[in-house]
Amino acid sequence: MADLAAYHRLQQFLFHEARLMDEHRYDDWLALWDEDAHYWIPCNADDVDRSRHISLVNEDMAGLRMRIARLKSRTNYAQRPPTRTAHVIGNVELEGDGEARTVIVHSTVNITACRRGLLQTVSGRVRHKLRLDQGSPKITTKKITLINNDEVFGNLAFLI
Amino acid sequence: MLRAAGSCTDEPRPWGPGRATNPSAYATLVQDDRVHSAVYTDPAIFADELSRIFETCWIFVGHDSEIPNPGDFRTRTIGRQPVLFVRGRDGAVRVLMNRCTHRGALVCVEERGAAARFTCPYHGWTYLNTGELIGVPYAERYDDSMAKEDFGLRPAPRVADYRGFTFASLAAHGPSLDEFLGPLAKAEIDIAIDVSPVGRIGVAAGVHKYGYNGNWKLQSENSVDAYHLNALHQSFLDIVRDQMGVDGRAMGTGTSPAVIRSLGNGHVAWDTAPLGMELQFIGSDAAPADWREAYKQQLVERHGPEHARYLWARSAPQVLIFPNLVLISSQIRMIRPIAVDRTEVHLMPVLLEGVPEELNQQRLRGHEAFYGPSGGGATDDMEIFERQTEGFRATVDPWVYLGRGFGRETGRPDGSTAGQMTDELGSRAFLAQWKKMMTAA
Image (cartoon, rainbow over all chains, first blue to last red; front, top):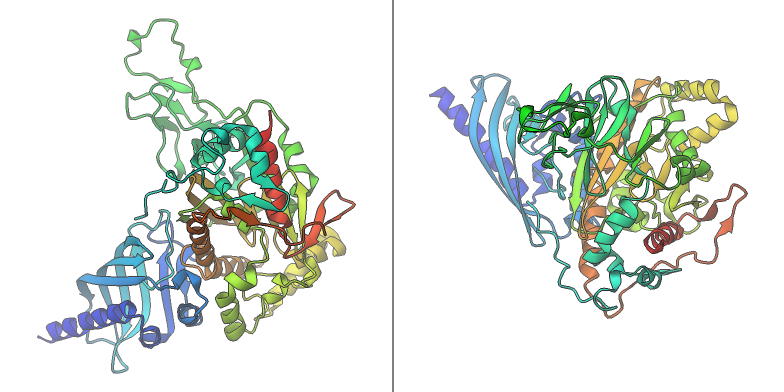
């Protein structure tokens, strides 16, 4: 039953994170991250050597703070008006028992995004590494493997 | 994922039907200080551009470091024509039309890879990576007049390279690549390579690909428009200033000492050396480090103090090579025309050989911060191209005004024409070449 409780708690965390993104609660979303966090969306392939290959998003907390500052800026024209999103999180799977200091949570995300008459779908697998020793979970790493990471993109300036 | 392209086809043409293919019409659409927005929206003009520009000009296909080994290939386009950029088993770099000589299907649908041979899946015709046809199933039903050597993959009529930058032309005749680039555009390509202290670059760090619903020329012109930097990219510049303590606005003001130059043949470059900045990659000024001095010394040893200082001040080429190649910051940018109102852009970061590792990291990380479909700058550019395309539907006054700095250009001893950084000299020079090619006999 401990497993089930941990699973429920971590699944709720992913749902909560998704809702903060969908509701454009940028500061609340940022507060979910650990100070030495890393946010990664590889480009062209599911795994690349970041020191030799570009990513779509490859950010530590300083980079994430810049991303959030830009999302909040009134002159961020790529997000004025902002993209409306609906994140659907599924296939949640825990690696480990949820009782350790950190846990890996795998999930699948399907995002329907709408902006200025354009409806698009962004979809992929997500791997969260969460830190559990600070009360509520903190995101240590989040990697999103988009199914279309080698395709031509429109504006991906919203949170994924 | 995307809105259907072609939404402009029902627009009225202000000059009447049929005239778009009459070359003399272009002379009125592009004037010295303004351009008619039909140039960006009319499907007939787009079709004409594909033949008069993309199938005539030298078009960048790839850098030879992308295909270092025999069999390595990239699929690319010249205009909308699919080609294979491939190193054959004989070591030679070729540009081959990606079209089976039998029934016309693509012989390769992958964007990158390595292959000893290419087999068309339709009837099984098989070609070596040199283009030679080696396999025709059940050949006994062809008579002797069908010779395999006549049915190799067709090479682009002309292929040439400058320091590994490979260009192809679908026209059998015309100016050589050397004449087309001229010494000034070649000098910009030189910067891309000479900032490596061993004179070698590697184009193998992946590719950002984004698309927008607008004309390809909007991206070409934007690539050398400094007037937009402090307005359109205000949010990015604000945040870099607030969070990193770097003010990037000096380059794009009306009193900036930086210069925009027309290099001839529609090529346009920025020269930011007069700004006195160093290593202008995002964040580079925030954390001075020993490796910068080491790199500076490497450049001095390779090029001597004076040229090293210039390379240090420039740190990267900043050039539009007509019609659709841009070298800027750490990237090679290829602009692909898809439809009159649909464009795809490929950005390939360039890594330098023989430099401190920190510099390459800075080139990649700086690129990710600003460029690409999730970047803090390119997304605003994509947005404005679509807003322009929507705005162009208002045709009470169909003109786009490009008069900034018009008549205030100065000639330079090297043959270039220079203006203040924010002058719209870039668009004017680009469109003058466009008009020249569109009206050529």
